[in-house]
Image (cartoon, rainbow, N blue to C red; front, top):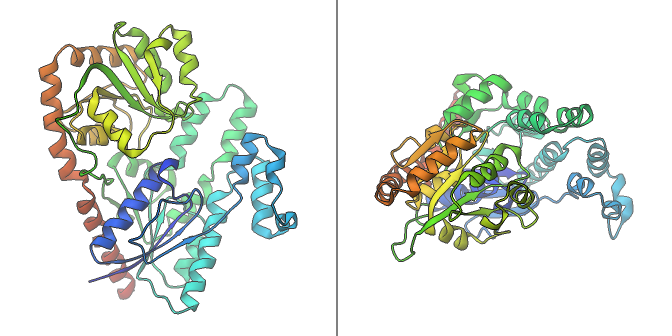
Length: 418
């Protein structure tokens, strides 16, 4: 049975995080299966989605980002500055100025308004799929008779805990407490038709922190383009080259521990970090005496990222928490062995002989595991060969999309029987 699906996602670009990747690939795969997919999305907007029936961009002024950049001129709305007094714009400006993240709530109201217009125009949808927004506007969509499912890769409570660890004084801790809209997201999640998550570890945290009932949740795993992320025997492995994909500015990614690990490795070992050009990792590496062995790529295109995975001897994932761990899965799909911390969902994703887990935050253990692989090329080759089949079987997009469509049907049947 073909379904009509409306995706709502408050950020859509693949460069803005896993939610943009998830949106684009899941929508594409569902369309390939014959389902009708419309997308209602906020900025940064996704790459072109020719497979979608409709892509409706829902703009916002991104005041929260402008506030962090400390650029007062950016707050003037051009060409009509008086638009700032429209209710949602004024709310976003005021909330950003007070240290709150207004984006999920404001987007959910815009999505509610846009979908309500489409319904009045005669469009019909079987299900609405939210991608980790969890704003109050979703409850309005359910009140209109549309079953809403949401995907939560991990709850924002995990980010808040790690942000507290980074805070250096009471003012910063208060800022962390008020920034994350956890109360709203928990309230909404408990009332939606279904919560989809990508790992058992993430599901447990959602139950614990958001109070979602176990029977309301379904774990489907995350999807991966295993045709794109694949080995290439014509690309030579660099025997002493490590790779890590992660933002130093995100405390969950454990980049400080990564740099401490690099300082403990032999002089000939090099590390490539896929992060922004101005990454704090540069300073940390200079302070640790290993700055000359660190290369920070800046933004890379997908094709270059795949090449980096294919050429690296080992991919290192030093995270303090992961709701899934996409870089680990991407590396393994490219037959690249992985050394990762036992953080969040990583032990689930790495449940294969193609990877090694070490304790979280332990730079010595990371260094020891990396050296043991670098010194044993045959073991690296065996790890890589064993990793890919498991990733394809568990996380290839056609499998994840089929499981997602089954959830849609269950939700629709339950709504019809209610």
